[in-house]
Length: 146
Image (cartoon, rainbow, N blue to C red; front, side, top):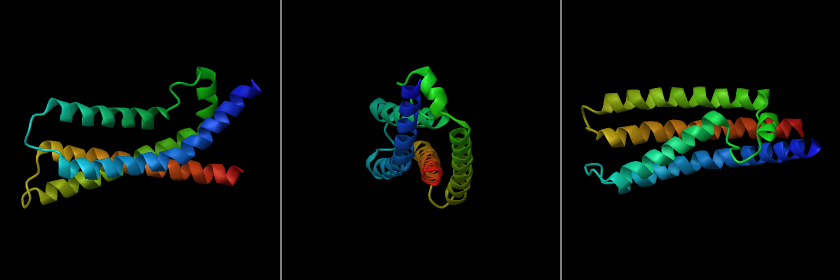
């Protein structure tokens, strides 16, 4: 049983360190794809790679990760503080998504955007900021608890 608590503690510390970097990775990947993708093409590879990446990142955010850990360790690692931090991150991501949607709508009469490009901007910025917010809250919580 103590081994489960140690695994959960190690995972929580690792998650606190990794989440902001995952958020930055999403934001950097968004910048890369924004200028590299051919937005007018119907490349299924391009579509499914981005869609798969976005779905995996969303699932990580909604579940807290730890998919390969035993269920008991996941329950220990997903304590009330982590759930609260994740909830704040999801709300932050939602607010950012709404702001970016409003910006896309306001700018579109002057600079028309392809639907895939607009979706990429909205999803990537909201997921990226949500992961950064989650990681910072987790890191600050772990630092306060040490």
